[in-house]
Image (tube, rainbow, N blue to C red; front, side):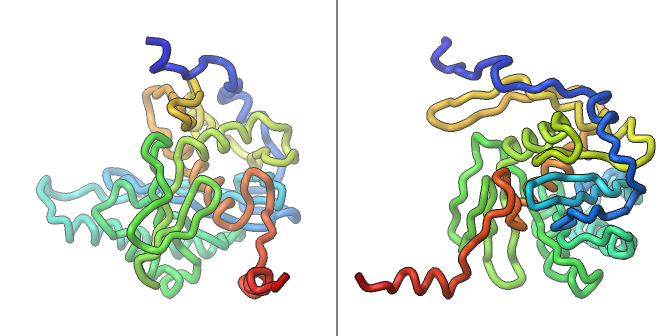
Length: 282
């Protein structure tokens, strides 16, 4: 009945189509980092069957964003049907290592690289992220997106929480980030509806971006509302890839991991200040 479906249709939704995204052209050259940029975040979606999909986004302190570069790193399809987990892991690890050199050489060299570990055999991306600073000099994190219905910032390992994401620390070399994919996908999509240059808005460089824009619109938000005290999202799924959309959601979460959430930059007290506050005697 109605009680079990309180998702309201058309209440908090936004008009987004490929033409809106294509109109957000900021006139900058591909790879040119704007002077307002506070952090440059790269995100990669791993699809072993065809390619690594990567987007590089600049973020200002007010969560203003600009796509600086995006592209595919083609992966060699498996030569045989049956492959061991070790062989699959090796192919993904080597592809990421190979992709890291041109990524680090871009004029818009990222401060942070977030790689989706969801579609890879266990721990491949976690291991690569631990070694990436030695391989390419970029701080790298393995990330896992979770639907809002199952996202919980809890676990048996040490966790550090942020806005709709948390870092899990099993050891100094085994760390990863889990995030609310629905929350950040909506934020990333909404960014295209703002005027270029506005806080929380996003824009594109000079060029032809038809495929990029089409991919972002292939998962339209159909409904959103509270179910059992928690926010839930309902998405449409149109045919064709939506990897660039997934990368953009990761990028906005990556900005939050750098301290630029939906409220802009959050100034955090350092540990010493917190310790002082805790020990004040009244």
